Image 1: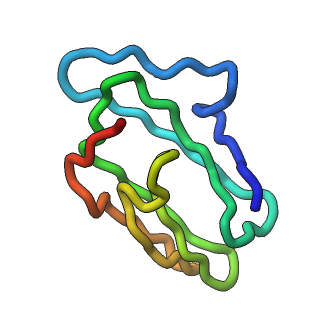
Image 2: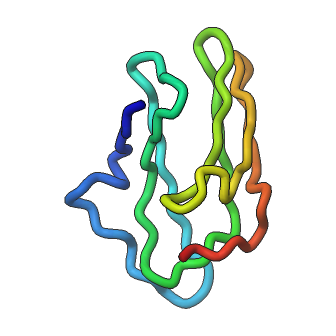
Length: 102
């Protein structure tokens, strides 16, 4: 089980300042090796008191299939409980609308 880090979640990166209204954060991570069960990819940092209102996960595998979840440090499936990635590019939407970030 490895923890991988996208550029927007790197140690030296600070989360975007929280502004009134809707703010967006996008992040892309492309694997260079096969992932193992239990691997974690940290994608973005959220500012204090942010509320996640939408998550879109674009995914596909080069070969085979993978089961993906999108969450945070408290719950692996907080935003997207479980989705299967295959060789077909797919977009999966957030399964828990307006889930509070704590």
